[in-house]
Structures are given as structure tokens and as C-alpha cells.
Length: 403
Image 1 (spheres, rainbow, N blue to C red):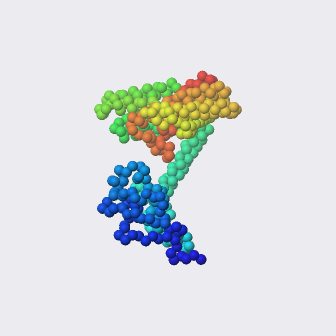
Image 2 (cartoon, helix red, strand yellow; image 1 turned 90 degrees about the vertical axis):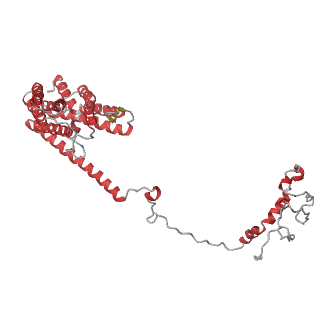
């Protein structure tokens, strides 16, 4: 067992320093002292110890051969200076390793095992309660959307198969609710439309469609517009031109849905209307999902920035595919060519109807026309795409001898 008291590395025996000598390196002699020549067993015999070391500045004046320090001298002097460190390293090889205790410190936010967002950024983070509240609200909104959609579709299907005045009453109710939302939105933005004349006009158009046809619908709309003009001519109102214009605009716009009543009077009403609604719905669904996944180029950046050309192409493919597939079902009295023509009408006119409402909402600075359908917005937001499609579909069905 080696002696651990004072281990020494080989060739590193202690030297007795010269009295009054402070520097071990020959080139670190002070300027006011003359160099001394020392000889030891560790120095090299041919070392030029006679070189003067009057200072660092003097060393720079020597030529390269005279000022070159041999590697042996440098290593010897450096090893002598760090002798204690070498002895400590040698002693550590024989000693047991010392276990150092860990330093514990409290860190904010680590008590629960997670670093708080506020501790890192200095901003107030979102708590778990707030996240849970948002998730519950989203789930509740989805539930309301499903329930309201089921109620609307249920009423539509029930009245469609009952036929007659039931379906006419359903269409009249939809038009009254949609037009009422439009007038209410206008009132919140400073307009004063004559809601009584407009609502009476759409109800009259539904009745005229049931008992007559497209001609009585046109007559009803003209009479409604004349009554509005006569009222503003007799009664003094603020901004008569603006208020008369928005009153007639809303009534004529929404009354186009009354053409569905004419289609509903035919012997094949249920199959034709369901075919039209399915193609329009699949066009909207295909456009939504394709646009959400791949949409990059907006169709109308100002009016509707969320509608993209990629979504439109996806909607066209979905509508055409649905028309081709549904035409093979015997219950639908259309050929494949007729179904494809109907899909073309849908993909051209449905975006125009949606864009018309977007233009009005953009002008008024609103997102939805109403909240009558929880999770879906207003009634007008749901039927806007059909307002231009239904009259065109009526003309197509009539020309194809399907009515």
C-alpha cells in the first residue's frame, strides 16, 4: 500500500528555492535584478542560461536564435510552478470519492410538476377552469347546432310530405322570419323600413304562388312596392328614399323563395325539392371541407374572404357527383343529364345568393342577420343561397316537363 501522506510524481522531487528568488521562470525576472545562472539535475546541459533577462522589452530585441526558449526549460518551469496541483491529483487516485450533497432550490411554478405560463412569459396564462369552460361552450354550441338543424329539417320534411297548405305555410313562415331579421338588422343601423308592408308582401306572395303561379307573385310584389311609395309620399319620414328602397329590396329578395310553393304543388314535389336541396347542401358541404383543407385563393377577398376557389372547385365536384348518383335512384324523376344541368344551376347561382347577403352584411358591419337558429345564425343566413336557385330550378323543371 503506497504512502498517501505525501505522494510525489516521478521526476517531480521538490527543489529548494533560492533565498530571495520569487520567480521560477528565467524570463520572469524583474527588471531591477540581474539574471542568475542556475544549474540543476532537471535542466538541460546545453541550455543557454547565460542569456540576459533584463525585461520583457529587452527580450523582444534579441534575435530569434538567442530568444528561443527550449521546450524542456518551459516544461520544467511550468511543472515546478504547479507542483502542488500535480500532488493533489496524484493523491486523489488513492482516496475514496467524496459525495457532494445536491443543492435544492425552490422554483416558481414547479410545485405541481409544471412550469406556469406566467412564470416564463410574465403574462397571465389560461387556467384549467377557463379551458374547460371554452370546451364546454364549444360542445354546447355543437349540440345547439345539431338540435336546431334537426328541428328545421324535421319541419321541412313533415310539411313537404303533408303537402298542400302545410308546405305553403312553412315557406311563408321561413320568409317572414328571414325578412324580419333583415328589417331588424337595418333598424339597428339607423334605417326605418316599413316592416308591415314588406312582411305582408312575402305572405301574399306565398298565397299567390299557391293559388296562382309566378304571375300572381309578380303582381303581389308590385302592389307591395306601390304601397310603400304611396306611404312615403303621404307621410313625412326621415330619409324616405333610403327607407323605401330597403323595404322593397328586402321583400322582393326574400319573396323569391315562394317559387318553392309552386314546385310543391306538383305531383312529384317531394322528390324534386329534396333533389334540389340535397345538391345544394352537398355543394355547400364539399366547398366548406375542401376550402378549409386546401383553400388559398379567395374568390371575393372583400365580401367573403373565407370563400376560396379551391373550395368552389370542391363544391362543384361534390354537387356534380351527388347529381350523378341521385339520378340513378328511381324515386328521383330525372335523367343523369337533367341532374347535371340542375347541379350547374346550383353551383352558379348559390354563390351569387350567398355573395348578395355577404355584401349587405359587409355594408352593415354584421356577421349574422339573426340568432333564431342557435349555432347557425339567422334564418336568412341558411336560405340565402336558395333565394336565386329556387326560381331558376322552377324554370328548369317547367321546361323539362317535370312539373
